[in-house]
Length: 481
Image 1: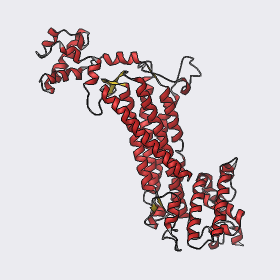
Image 2 (image 1 turned 135 degrees about the vertical axis):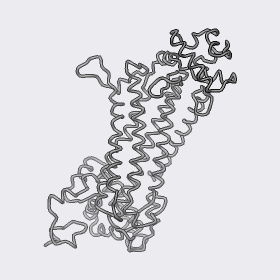
Image 3 (image 1 turned 180 degrees about the vertical axis):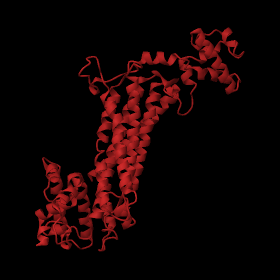
Image 4 (image 1 turned 60 degrees about the horizontal axis):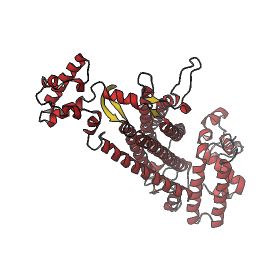
């Protein structure tokens, strides 16, 4: 009678009493891990291959199981299939759902598939496959955004803007140089994510519940079929490792932080007080009360999303803190944070389209870059070339700036006679050394804002983006295989 009450469970033999109905509903993970069905099917097919190679399944049984698994995946990815999985009345989790579906399709052969494996290794494998796939989507999105930034940089050409430190105007830079700063961030983000993908790319199948499979399975078969580098090296670690989830979410936090910084600068530059940027109407909304308003909704949401991403990372860190080896039910709580950040690839595609649609007010930016003594560093450099120590040159130009402020002019508004009161080194060539172009081009070092350096940086960024795109193409071919 007890087993009848627990019928359909994957663990019913040990128990006499049924689960408390409310607890059963509360602890089921099918309501969120339904998203792992494709990964569960792929891992199950790979396990069938390993069982067949070990002689535990006949070739015909393995083929029948693999075909049935393909049918399950096909049903999931069409029509109302996802809702059917999510709302299944009895399945505890995605593993249980797939087993029930297999038995429904192929009878007792479906029960053979669980031979030599545990749900502990199944979920560890599914999550690795899922995170690996999400990383590919995010890296693709980063490449698209970086491409949009580079395209804008080429379009802006020689357009100039002030750079800022302490949110105060500092030195003139090319707009392309400012955009390239975010390209660098996107490339670092891609590197972090791909590093994470490389570290997680080991296959837990064959680890059993904790001590390893009890059958002589060739673990390399499943690992190769699923595109992993190799099987995991330790069964205890394999079933309890969720480092890759935390690393993934922390890497996404960097993505969110960089998007948030970009968003905040756009929000500032789009204000009437700055006026550097015209917000694309396709990504803005108006006010229900004030007819004149155009609000930067996309960038404000970008700024906000990083909180959700970092919150997911903190949640997982707290779940893992202090957990004894190996698998614990607590680990079920590491799944929803992963699913909660699935918006990141779409967010990157949106910000790429937004970036492409931005319009810059070049005249206003140039005027801002030419005012406020932003050429003071170039002026000090002029004196350095005359043999003056930089600290002394800094002092001389600082005094000249103070004098010019009192007179109500820029440095190029001072006469040679007025300049010579701060140093006899000033001559007529001073004025050509502090023009806007000269101020830009005196930063002629790798990573600087000189015209030629920025042109080369755009070419370099384009090549890195092509490398990322080629990586994506290789992964797509592998996934298709």
